[in-house]
Length: 79
Image (tube, rainbow, N blue to C red; front, side, top):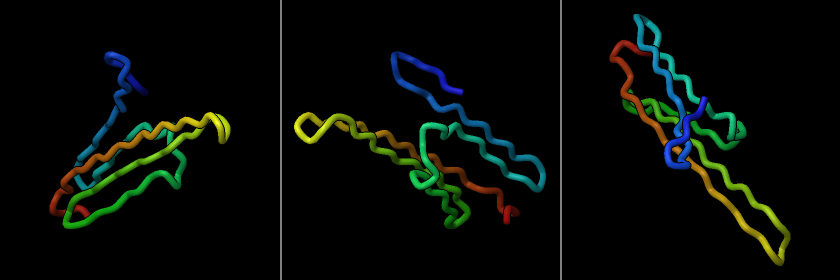
């Protein structure tokens, strides 16, 4: 799901932190799997996406870059 505010797309995020489970849901439908990077370091979950779209031919080419980065501190007992 996406919302638009002043022509800016806002990604909807759902975080579920119940008991022994930490779950994050992001709408990444505009990204290919190779455009996404998920890491954990020092109890911080990081999800990043970066995609470049090129259109046109060599003489008249344009490109658009979209990216996001979200981080969450994981609970101490999260494995």
